[in-house]
Length: 258
Image (cartoon, helix red, strand yellow):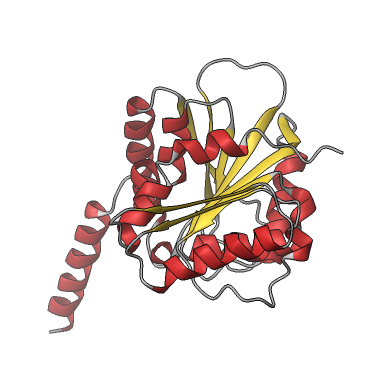
């Protein structure tokens, strides 16, 4: 009986292993398809990982395939709550379809994309530690042109991050989350460019996105844009946000250089 149970367990284990996605093949398939960006996996160093809280050990980066000169802007994309339980392979494939990697490819711009992955909600403190590491090790990044984009949990993470460290970023595009309050630090963001985006049929998130942009304008912010994608629910709003090239084009006009 023990041998039978062991045999079944071994078979299931081997079958599961054989059916597991091959991340290198997924990566190759993406890069064979993409015309503008070269996608790479970034594994955080072992001595850094304990400082990164709930971030998964692997992040995604993308660089222009064509040769570029000079410094490049950095676009950081934060995923939503669904990614918390997905494998890295699943996140990689999805990002190439409806997340940060797909947006970077779609824009055709000379920029670097960074997309970290998280087991839990985003923490601005660990994100700042992550960003410190990136800027230290990728010196081709223009530190005055760092941009953020995210939806749902990712949008909420960006909203909290820019309130804590607005000086680090030049602009942000975000939406698909609720809970914006008059107690948020709108005065701190009075000069910070924000592009609010939400699916027009995304329940309470619509009012939240509108409230965010209205209160930013009321604080004196003149660089605020807002769009509710007509007829889009939450998943559709995510897809439209990450294909809204106009947002990236708009953000790239801004720099936080003094």
